[in-house]
Length: 452
Ligand SMILES: Cc1ncc(COP(=O)(O)O)c(C=O)c1O
Image (tube, rainbow, N blue to C red; front, side, top):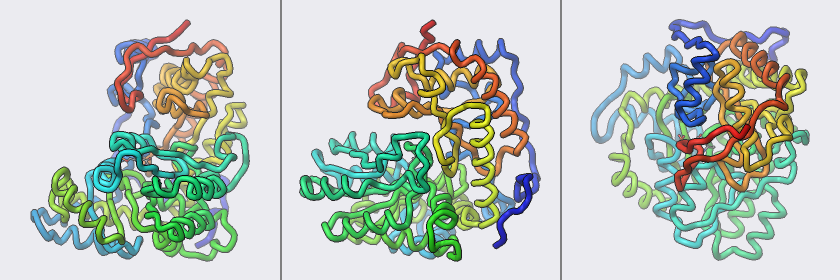
């Protein structure tokens, strides 16, 4: 398919149904933020103008997905909707065992509870927070092995999501007996939504197979990863996106997937594998916590929408528009002097809050401070990915995640203008201290207070 040749980015869809967005006064936003203990997760959606908290479960379903919902077969066992989903997932991934789950972390929890023993070691380019938490609750260790460039926001590298192969070799040589699983997160959300190259997936797969270690993908953004392979990796520009996805999955023994991202559904996930013994363990655990294996915590209609969404996410025109729109967002922020993680990733723009707000130390959460400032200025909600989310974080980022097919280019321009105003008074933005903190995933519910 032809590349887009115009300067103006257009949404490759028309809007059939609209939803009002709240427009608040500054005083209303100040009161809302104070009420929530300065935690943006605790805001009401009715208090947010542009919600870039997450691209997860926030996408707009297509007319075809809405139509598919009506075909939902709600049979408890053996539903036709499961058969349809299974056929699509077989075709895209090649995995024999396909288990639907209600969202990505349910797949992670099943994996952690069935095959991870206390003391086990799990390697990943960078674990997402829920993956890490599920592994740690099982008493195992989640170790990240990103390439060194991933830690340098301004470093240009087409595949900053790659795993550090030297580090992987070292860990396999020294701690082989402890390693229960190797994973690659596509794209690498916690490190800037950065893609993983096919060459790296192949190299990790080869090492895992040689050492007899199971290898899984966290495939939440498999389609965006396939797009970057198509556009950035030599030799793949003539490949069909579906073939790239198939090749990626063929290198692994299984995957966890939150379908709330590239599945473009509001709820849903998958746990897939070719390992028969693991599949039996997964299925038993699935029945315990999610439901019968042909619905797995979802309605039949949700399975239908997921089957359609998984295929739509690999549409060339859609991925071209999405990646171009996010690159435009990042380029305009950079023109205003707002430092962003380079190059722009697949689902979000990550502002380097550590560099924008050098007067705020790590333990005063620069990413969170910027998130609060963006909300106060224009009702834009993003999420900190830094020391508040991961106490040992190397980078202090504010992620502005773009829901799929929801906001227009005018909305993106508005967010750029809000960022411009915030950047103009950056040195006056205060840091934050923790007031209350829960034991796990503290960023979701902690309360904070500004340190003036
Ligand atoms: C890379 C990655 N893995 C796993 C998850 C967890 O998925 P879910 O939110 O559907 O439980 C997420 C969600 O944000 C993610 O980005």
